[in-house]
Length: 320
Image 1 (cartoon, rainbow, N blue to C red):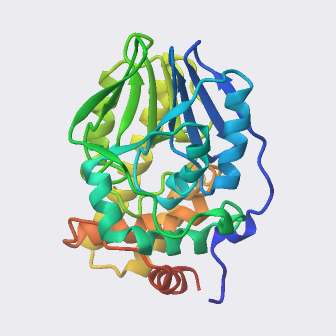
Image 2: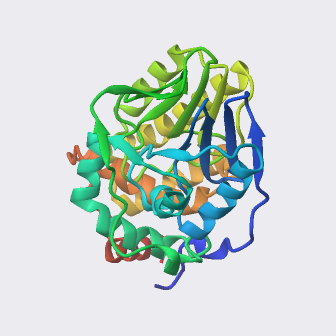
């Protein structure tokens, strides 16, 4: 590969924040790295997304233990990507009894989990720096649901819901309805480029409209700082919607004009860099995003499986 993945140049450790959103909800964020949500109930703790490795998860656990000694009984996977789920084993020693995901997420792990694991480890050397701590095999949900379900942490109800396809077909939000707090996974990003390599471009904006309709006043995105006001939440949803729509509109136009993927990619980079180029992981995500948009615009309704080999072939073709 004549040019390494953009993420290979990102080796500097990030400043972690552990933000209290309410007496029950916290956000673990790190300057655009994947976020983890924490919900503390009467008798147990729930973690939403686990970090990329058990070693990285230990820092989340350390911060949880600064505010509660209750067992971490539940882990929720917002979707299947390895950078979100491979830290799950660290929570077993903390009392984890169930790993929960949508049935669609489970099916995606069956279909493409091994390939995704190899692909993501190759893409993100810093996030998978302690990859040897990941147990052999994949992270498997022990409980699945379709559509929606509730988990009770004592008297505290946590609602899990699929509101439509977006970042993946299995996306799940977790929320505290009475407190108007949502953990949105990678359906929403804030000042961070949405990775859309496994997305549904036609569906994602409508799914975000549904999310906006909940009226959440605080929201933890997949990447970026915790959003602590309704205005910030609306802004993050709108900016994610804007990015997805801009990428797909440009690709659709290029396809209609008969342009090649390479030409469309160069046009998209030139058009979108002034508006979004300062966002975290812009240069890393754009080749994957434009490739998926081109696929969807040319008849691939469902995302093709990324493998480590396909990653390299794509990057050579667009960035080599």
